[in-house]
Structure formats: C-alpha cells, structure tokens
Image 1 (cartoon, rainbow, N blue to C red):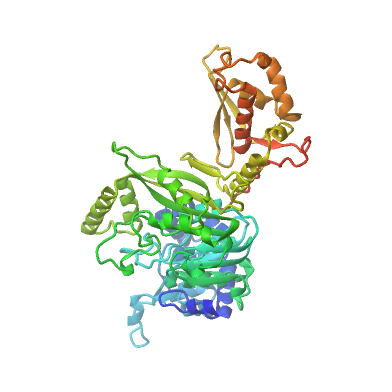
Image 2 (image 1 turned 90 degrees about the vertical axis):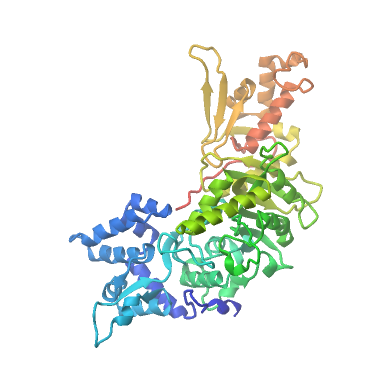
Length: 591
C-alpha cells in the first residue's frame, strides 16, 4: 500500500508493526497517560503553562510528586512518563521499565524509535558497569482530547523548550495553538471527501475523520507523513480505522500544496499551511527552509496561491477553511492600505474563473519588527546573537522592499459557488481582534446558512416570520445620570463571534417586542402607529434613515442584519412554512 512508504522514514517513529503499536497503546492506557490524567496530576497552573511552552511549573510539580513519600505507585509511574515525554527528562532503564509496566513495553518503545539510550549508555558494559544507563524520549508523545471526547496520543518532534539549539529544518510540529484554532473553526458537517493540505503530524486529519468518509492528507515533508501515519495507526480504534487497510479511509500523499490531488475534487478542504513570511536568499534551497512554517515562496504568496487555486479541487458548493498571514502594504502617503484590499483580489481571481465566496476574519496585526521577533524565537534562532541580528535585519529589509506596513493574521473561509448568477455571494471581511467564544465552527456553519436563507427571502416573506431574541443576547444602555433617554444602546451576543451592535431607539424598540407572539410585519406596523410613520415625509425623518427611504424599510434592513448576526432565533409559529430555523448551538471543545 502507498502509505507503507512512510512506515520507516529515517528519524521518525516506526509504524510497520501494528501489533507493536497496539501493545504501546495498551501500556499508555494502563498508565492513565491521558489528557485528563495529565491535567489532574500536574494541576491547572502547570497544565496551562505547558500551552505557553513553559515547562518549569510542570517539571517542578513532577519532581515534587516523585519526592513525596506518600505518592501512590500509579501516580509515581505517571509522573515519570509525563516528565519523560513532555519535559524531556531522562530516566534510568529501571525507572522507565517500571513506569511502563515492564521490560517488554520498554522494548516496544525502543523498537518503534520512540526511546533511545543517552550517550552515557555507550560506556555501560558488563565489564565496566559504571552508572545505570539512562534513556531519553526521541520525540514528543502527548495526549490530546478532541472536541467530541475522542482521546488520542500524538507524536511529533521535540520542541524548542524540550531540546537545545535551533530546530531542525524538517521539524514536524506537534499540537500548537494554530492547529487547535483551525480545529475549532473547521465546520463539522458530514462530508464524503475531505482534504488536509499540509497535514504535519496529522492533527486536522484526526478531526476530519469524525465527519468525513475519506480524508486525503498531503505534505511536502516525508517525515511529516511518517509522523501522521504513526499517529493514525497508534490511534486506529479511536479514529475508527482498520490498521490493516488504512487507505480505506485515509490517503497519505507527498507533494507541494495541491499538486498531489490535481484533477480531484473534495467537499471540504482544510489547511494550516506553512504561511510564515520569510525573507528569501540568493541560492537558497529547500534544505535551508523550516518546512513546517516556510512554504519557500516570497511574501504571502503561499496564502494567495492557495486562495486562488483551492476552488479547482472543490466540488460546486464545496468549502475550505484555513489560517494565514497577509501583508498590508503602504499607500502613496506611507499609511496602511485597507487590510483586506489585497485579499479581496485573491478571492476574485479564482482559478475556476468564477470569484469565490469569502469570509475572512482578521484576528491580529503585527508590525514587521514584532513579526520578525516572533518567528525568530519560534525556531530558537534567537540563541545565537550574530545569527539573530543578521536574520532580523533580513526580515526588515524584506518587508521594506515590498512596502509592507504590517502583517495580518486570521481565519479564511472559502466556498466555490454552486450557481453562477442565481444566488447572492457571501463576501465578508471582518476585523475582529477581541476575544471570541471558541469553538466557532458551529456558529460559522449556522451563520452561512442564515445568510443563504435570508438572501433568498423576499421582504414580504421576512415580515411573516416570528422572532425571539437569542438566549445569550443582552442589552446595555448608557446615559447620563438622571437622563430620560439613553445616549447609547448596545446589543451583545454572548457566544460565537460575540458581536456588539449599536442600536437606534427604533431598532431597540423592535428588539424588545420580539417574544415570538407577533410577526416582524405586525411589530413594524405597531411601531409605525406609535412613531407616526403614516405621516412620513423624507425631511421629517432624515435623522432616522436616508432622506429617500421610508423608516419601515430602513428598520427592515436593520432586522436582516440582526438576524444575520445571530441576535434572534425564529419560532416555528410562522405564516411562512419555509422560514429557516435560526437557532444557534454552542458545542464546547475540550482543550
């Protein structure tokens, strides 16, 4: 089988023996080496510090557990394995074998290339026993709990906080914040075929298998595909995979971007691509690049290329979700251009010839200086002062040469239109840098459905709908003490994108009447009588809306916006039997 090509790649876990992997899985289960097991033993503070790549609270906690004479044997064994795999502490052969439940389990880990002796082992012989040999973890192996409760173990290369020196160029990243973010925003509607571009250790593929019949996972790095294969087989029962027939549900393919799937089409594409903007150098080769983050292209070309080309591999109506960086260039005055100006052109220039639908949420903006510092630290390139300073200058020169003002980061949603002219396309570009209620995947799915249904509804059909304010929505009123009326009225959503909407007095009155009893049209009629809209003239109501628009029409536009932004749920009691249900669901993810 094609995936067997990646079962024995040098410097990766070995996955050619499924029986051995089954025994390793059993040993880890017996240890309670799980997400909850680690969190419970370390405590919340040390556990949360790991997410910040801070190991001292964890190593301090592990040492305290081992030094405590009252520690139970199961906790002592688990503490040793946590220190070994998560904090790269060495153990003697006796300690490691005891923690794993015996020599056979240790030998399985050695055979799978997860464990190796330290250099001191070479001097330990029967004739010269010296100190007992020590062993170290070759790779990071940590528990992960998916949003549906699936418990997994994920192998990856040791991180910068676990090993000395600069990371290797073909480093395979583990479960990071970016991969968790992508998992939290990816829609989980059941699909037949899904594509994971740049799979790395396989984290997105694991999540996709919960709602996709088949997943194709690609990566330019054979080492990454080897890690992905190992992780898939180690977790085969949890992922509902047949270890003897992996390709029935997963296909592993090596190649750049979309090259491995040319001519194919998928229902869903996800990608956490190597989007980090990196200064290019003369005579540079792929061996000079950190493949886990650097796609080898100048500037933000890796992201623009994917946005333009992904529609080719989507079925009509198919969707894609990815993370990315984009450059925000300067205008003629030296100020920043609109952050979404270049992004809009990428979606319009789809390789299919039809502009893609787009929803982009910018979550962060960095200066060139902050950007350089972030990524130099990421690969531990800040440990050599001369290298750090020269590479830092290269970043600044690179951004200056392309007239870059700042760099945006965010989430990108794309849909290949199912029709060419009959439907209104979704094109939404939002700058949302405040905290949101992750996971937002379900909110995204429902928001897109609301958009599609609302744009298909005539105003007449909309007025026949009965609305109820969503349960998580609250209203705030701000005004001077003693004032009869508020100066500001805000409507806040407590889930999803946690939007805040500024309301007019008329719109606030409309919202307060939405208890499901009256239709939109009936509420508008009541407001018209109360506010005297029957005697409407443009001049008299210019302060409410545009001078040539009736206040009722202006308010109806505002109502559409409120529904689209999930401030309401609809009632089944409606004069329009095809009216969409607008209720949102919030499904928490286990982190």
